[in-house]
Image 1 (tube, rainbow, N blue to C red):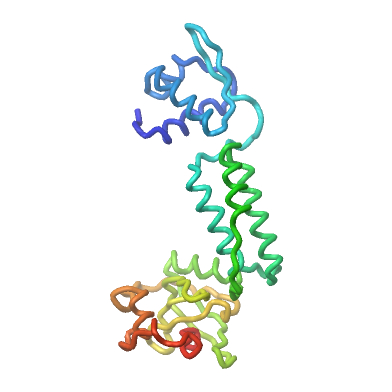
Image 2: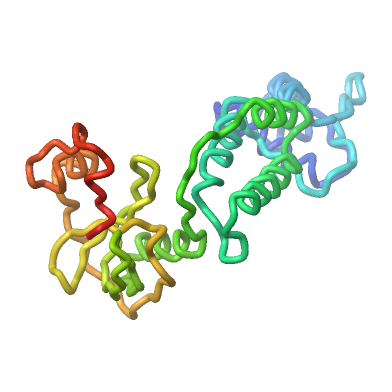
Length: 257
């Protein structure tokens, strides 16, 4: 028996989702709890918007009302608010290969939120609608390819070496071979922090200037990240000692590297 009410509710929902009528005694035995706990967990599911029918009496029983084939997800209202805000904040900064414009990125965000709402309970769906209605992002962000972000994220997770085309702030083209370590969002831009094998040092790359990413066979051996923290490394001009937080951002662009 677990004491965590969310885990218990998930287990109860999983049983009820199989269909049919379940007596409180059978549910209690199956889940390793008391019939009183079963009643409390059923009420918890109802508060979350699940429609659980009950048959009262000495042999009380419960049935999950037929409806959606995918059960609503058990998020809290605060978690839903974070998810909706996160989608709205990130959408202007990411673009698929097919959708490079801001309107298309908004369409992608709308599609993602619609899919999320489809698997939320009615109560949480209402919170998602409210959060979306109240949220507006005023930011002229530089769009980054979703495909580039995804390929680099996979490489970071798998310690995979990559090669990609890159254009610096002077529009000079080069090909970089890099061990990628982190995505960093800073001052309106996404950066890749990685160890450049040709230059034998840590570098940053503005991700909106990275072309298609090619994985190189094999993996790399992880190094310690530069500086006491990446934030401090950025703030001290990549470890050179100058505090860049007080410099004019127009005169310092780490993406030039």
